[in-house]
Each structure stands twice: as structure tokens, then as C-alpha cells.
Length: 119
Image 1 (tube, rainbow, N blue to C red):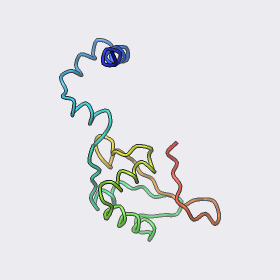
Image 2: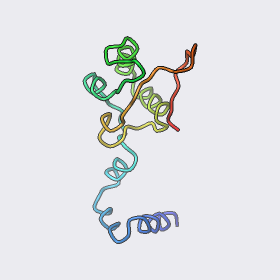
Image 3: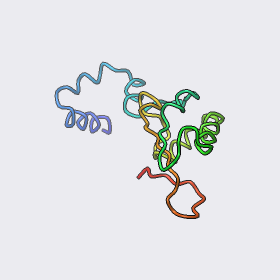
Image 4: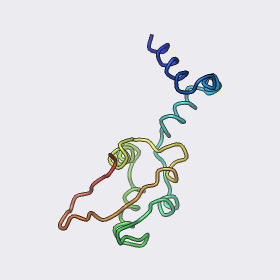
């Protein structure tokens, strides 16, 4: 019953073009709709795809520390980090370059804890 409802929903949204979805495997559809299963990034990707603001630059100590920590994180912690900053534990299709991670200092004077603006 749930599968029938799901198919109806897909056809409602995509119309007659929805039949093209059945050309994909389940794994391919999951990756397209939910993102990558494995959270993977390199130092180069972190340098290229973390945008800085509020006075931070790519050479700021805080940004350098963040990149170092992100590189050392094990897989489960990377997923938790992503969930904290984006509300989703997976990278989008295309990886880190599609995430558009932006880092700014907290404007509240005396604030010491990290914040996320995922919502």
C-alpha cells in the first residue's frame, strides 16, 4: 500500500516523465534524492569550498583549525557534524562543492559556543 501511494505521489509531482525514474537502480535513486552515503572530503576540497565571512579568511586560525578537525573526524562524526550544520547527515550529490558551507564568527559579544543556521 505504501509503495502504491509513493508511486502516485511521484507521478503527481513529475507527471508522465516519472516513468524515466524506473531506469535508475534503487541505489542510484537514493544517492540522487538523499545524497552520498559516505561523508568524504579532502583538504583541497575543504580549502576550496568553505566560504568565510565576518572577518574570517581562508588563512584565519579559526578556519584552519576547523579544516584540521574536519579532516581528522571519523565517518560517524563527519555525519554528525553535517547534521549539526545542515540538518542532514549526508553530503548532497556532488559532495562538498554543492554544500556551500559558510563560516562566520558569532555576532553576539561574548558568545563562545558554535551555532548553526540550518533552519
